[in-house]
Structure formats: structure tokens, C-alpha cells
Amino acid sequence: MFTKFDLRAKIVENVCLGGKYYRIRVEAPEIARQAQPGQFCMIRPEYSGESLLRRPFSIAAVREGGLLEFAYTAIGIGTRLISQSHPGQHLLCLGPLGNSFPVISGSRALVVGGGIGIAPFPFFNRVLNEI
Image 1: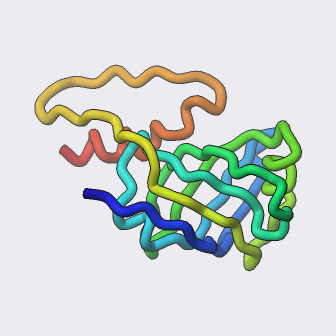
Image 2: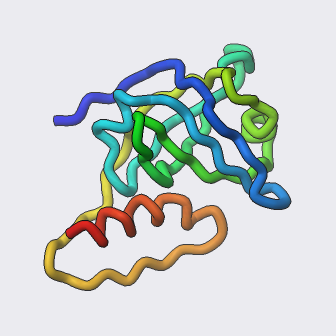
């Protein structure tokens, strides 16, 4: 059974990949230990005020040192605020949530996605390559 955590995740990196596309890395070792490909976290900036709802972010990667990586587009108020966040600031992060992708050993996988919908696939591809 998985535990979900509601914690303050310290931002380590937040970079624009071009246009409205971003990658953010946060320290969240409790979530990183349990995260599986296909799961997500509900995130909002710590300083955003109580009226702003959390946004779902697919977990794009789990990195060494308990880092979670997310890819996102800055299109609304919440994600634009996140895009303006800097290393050292914190996000409120609830996760891991959702069901993971099924991994069937010994079979081939066809992974299809488009736009920001490809966010969970780097993590999934890494796991597939390890089996």
C-alpha cells in the first residue's frame, strides 16, 4: 500500500524549455521513493494564497537525491505563478496520486503521446528499459 504525502517541496530548478513549456525539479524524497510511472502530484506555489487550487502535474522523472521532475505549460494563473518560481522557494505538493502504468515484463510497449501529454513518458521509458 502506498502512502501519499502532503509536503513543502523545495524548488531546485525551474527552467523555460521554450515558449510556454517548462521543467521544474523539486526536493521531495518521500514522494520520490514511492512514485511510479503514470502517477502525478497536485501542486501549487506556497505563496499563492489559499484560494488558488492545486494543479495536477505528471511525474516526468525521479532523480537521484529524492528529486521529482515535472514538465508543464504555463497557461493559466496557477501555472504562470509556478513558472515564475525560483530555486529555494517551495511548492505545496501532494502525491504520489493516481494509478501507475502497467508494466508487463517480457512484452514490447508502444508509447504514444502529444504535447505536454508526453510528460510521464520519460519516467515510464526508463522503467521499461530496466526490465
